[in-house]
Length: 269
Ligand SMILES: Cc1cc2nc3c(=O)[nH]c(=O)nc-3n(C[C@H](O)[C@H](O)[C@H](O)COP(=O)(O)OP(=O)(O)OC[C@H]3O[C@@H](n4cnc5c(N)ncnc54)[C@H](O)[C@@H]3O)c2cc1C
Image (cartoon, rainbow, N blue to C red; front, side, top):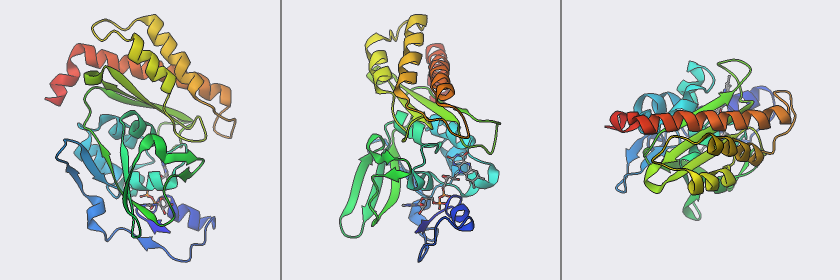
């Protein structure tokens, strides 16, 4: 069993959920803890870059992911925990997944036998804690373009820190393509995009105008319909579906206000 930050692995060992024959410590692999800006302008972020460095070093370029990273656990967990580990665990409640989906991230994985594979985030999550990663593959990095427009992440929890999401939502405006990306967390067996909501905005959003309240409302409805939540100890299915609609409207409003005010362009320099 690979171990990076150990913030999932060690909990599972301590609770005796797994007894792996061996642990493969990835921490000595220095390359995993590096990020670079590739020739095509995209960022390649090593699977072992901890959340705290996403916030401090990449917060301007990947603001949606950095916002999500700020909500993960506590400072201790953010010092150790990584996106690679979040992807490895593939929990529907993992906080990095919605912004990875909204920002069109691609996951780079590798096996000794078959070499490197690039998996779009939208194809990575297959079921509850199940991903497209084969048993002989490791996650090397994820690739993502620096934000071309405002990005936001919203999470409902029972308190403000150290909490697994009841549900979450991420949005990324892609003004150059007149498109909006979305990601839903903890409201379906896997993290997923709200595809019909994205298609609706691609057709109906007037990028030169104020946000039409009817468009906003419909976007919220379609986002809520994209969820297929369950009742569990953290919340009911009805509450989650409702909250997804609310967060979809809120995050779109925040992103739109930032876009229209020109604040994003000024901040991005
Ligand atoms: C107190 C506490 C609070 C938490 N709060 C949150 C929270 O708010 N939000 C959230 O999303 N998560 C939270 N978590 C869960 C955890 O911190 C995250 O999932 C984190 O991203 C895991 O990263 P890691 O590097 O520690 O992974 P690890 O524990 O090292 O590994 C996790 C899984 O990924 C696999 N893995 C790791 N690296 C690779 C790789 N390179 N290739 C293939 N497989 C790999 C491991 O084998 C394991 O199955 C919390 C955990 C704790 C203990």
